[in-house]
Image (tube, rainbow, N blue to C red; front, side):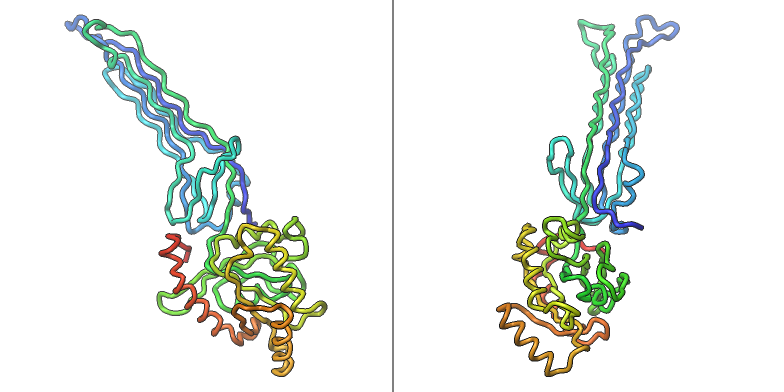
Length: 346
């Protein structure tokens, strides 16, 4: 299924049912009095977070959603039935905005969390409710109010503990295939990743975390070049970034690759450049130990890197276990689940 992370839909809550004007008419019961019932309330529209969904592709076809209207009141003091609420399933991490007012309505971060996006109309009042000592035969009833209608912009921002960064062909897809249950496309040409991928990394019994891979970043991504701008937003919810570097590039050098990605993060904003970021030197199986040590020392000196550095081969798996263990330890110290009160899909 095509990955879709934005959609615009129209939601219509149900109208309230009208009140009824009715009088009791039975043999031998003169002047039976009013007995018109109230109408029913209109159905509300809710968005519900569903952990089994990971894209907004379902909204490419169906874009209008209507809740049930309330039924009209009837005689014999019969109240109209209320309309059923409409619940629309969306992926975890969906942000909701009103198109007309640009108001942020909310976001769904918990499994089965519900968000009211359109309120149903209130029921009309039947004439039985207007009876009084001075008005024993009221011929008045009120109509039900209209349900809310809204055009909503849905934006999906994936929920993941760790995000992968890097230029095209840095080995991000190979890494997520190596350490998780995800199977993104891997090939020997750039831009094989065209949409984000999520993978669950199992470290031990009851110990796991979610990792997100996005398409490679190129120069000008923050201004819309390539696919970087479209998908950088999926890293805004992560707590830690892994910056993968190709240590055996065909052209260019690792220091330039680091600077290029850092520039795009700074331009994009949204605090991405302030997130904790670890440097991962990939494709070390293509270098001998002496060359690797020399390149690593030169890279640190050139970039003045102060953070964590790991050397791995995503293809062969060398060093990936040590990296995964370190990530799990760091995430446990950060206590993501309790501090942010966010649930991540398993």
